[in-house]
Image (cartoon, rainbow, N blue to C red; front, side, top):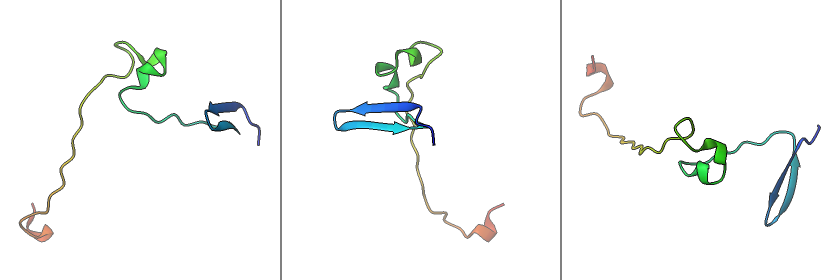
Amino acid sequence: MTHNYTVVTNRGSILWSRVVYATNMHASYLLAFLAGPDGIIRTRGQVLATRTSVGTDQIV
């Protein structure tokens, strides 16, 4: 396995061939190229899960 990337943290360095950068709407503060109208746009997302009041056989 070829280590193409070095991730440096305050706890040490990690060598790896792939890096996944997972973040939220504040990514543009860390990666400047994600700022602006073509970058990450801040939105608010919500999810609500409820039980149905009828059985699945009654849903059309």
